[in-house]
Length: 114
Length: 113
Image (cartoon, rainbow over all chains, first blue to last red; front, side, top):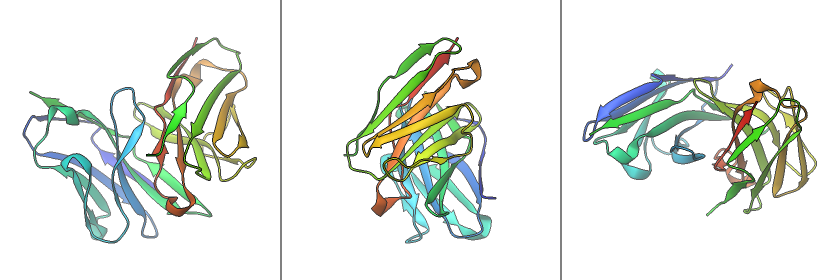
C-alpha cells in the first residue's frame, strides 16, 4: 500500500535559518509528489509539485524540494526562514488508480522564532 | 484563479442533528473531494465524485453521505452527527486535465456537542 511519512510533527527554526522538512513515500510506481501549505484557519494551497520533469522542483515563497528515487524521499527546504513561513506543511503523493488518488502525510507544523 | 468555497467556516451542532456542508467550485472541475483533517492524522478521504450524480467512497465513509446534483456543487451530509465527527472538513476539486493537483476550499471547522 502506498504511504507518506513526514518525519517530525513539529519543527522549530530561528528566523533566517535553514528550513528542512522531511518526507518519505512508498509507492510501487513513480508517483506525482506534492507539498501543500496550510496557514492558520485556511485550506491547503499548493507549494510545489514533482511530475518527473526535473528532480529539483522550485515552488512559491522560496521553497524547493528534491526528488530522490533511491531514497524514496521528497524533502522540502528553504535557505532562510521567515516569520511568515510559520504554517503546517503536508507532503502528498498522487497515484493513478482508475482516477487519481491523493495520499497525504500527517503534516509538519513549522514554528519560526524571532 | 480557481475558487473553491465552503458554506460555513465554523459550525456548532448538537449530537443527533443532521448536518449539511456545502462546497462550490467555479472552474468547471469534474472531480470533487471531501476530506476530514485531524491533528496527527493528516487528511483522510471521506467521499469523492468524478461526475454529476456519481459518488465513490473514500477511506472513511462511515457516518457520512454525499450529494452531487450539479457539477459545481458537492455536499457532505452527516445524517446524525456524533461527537467523534468534530473535525475540520476540507473540500477540494481537480480538473480533468490536471487531475493530480488538488484545489482546496478554506475548510469548515465543525464542533459537535
